[in-house]
Image (cartoon, rainbow over the protein chains, first blue to last red):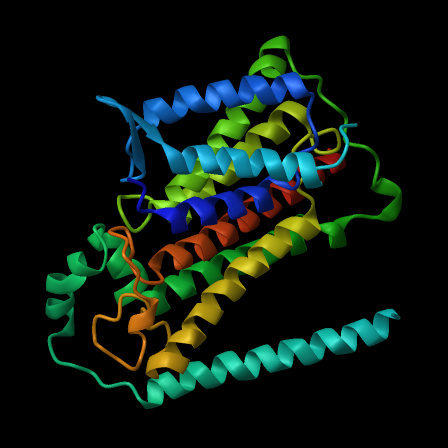
Length: 83
Length: 249
């Protein structure tokens, strides 16, 4: 059960703010970044109490993922075209 | 709008902010009631506010101290800005910074490392009331990610294009958020920076801000966010000033 909705929402919003100054990247980079973020979120695990138990023994860090999604959304929506 | 008019509005806004915040702080000092042994009491109840007792002490018990520490950063950045900033440049010297081309390794790993560091910085900010970490550390990690991007891509062709205005905006937003959260404490309980959500002293009608969340520590997480934004903005804008100052070499 997820009982830290506030942290998820706030990390997403803060991610958008910080990501709003990352220039738009090629789509393939976003896919690679998503895969890397998922791997790292599994490695970060339940730190600090923001874990989501996917299967027994495997924990994913949801705030890390929402921060990443916020950064990417900010970059795509507000980041501007790459030079 | 002309510059003079905009400047007048800015001065008025600054005056209003100064009056509000100074009034709130003076009112708190006026109504301050010193409880003997409060440090000992706080040491006992701190773990009930948030799992990370250090975070509770830093932001709840010693919120004023933390506010002062964050304002030191602003002072430091103003100093860096005065020494290395825009004022130090002559218009003719605003030449493009000699661009250093990133190596293949930097090109491949640069963006993923920087983005992941930024995610980790945000995670640290939101975990400040739970574990060691928080606004200072998270903001520093965010700024470090930006430093790495400057080292790899330089200032002008950097995909992470945080400019002076944006970074100063972040810094200002962080400081303003901290001060406004303090004023909310005054409005609710009469004490500046009173931890509204946790309400350990049972002041005023503020039970409605409690929500069913074991990670809830009142407004400590939001103070962490404010400090994180300010540290990120301060350190990064100092880095931008210093990087641009290399133009004089």
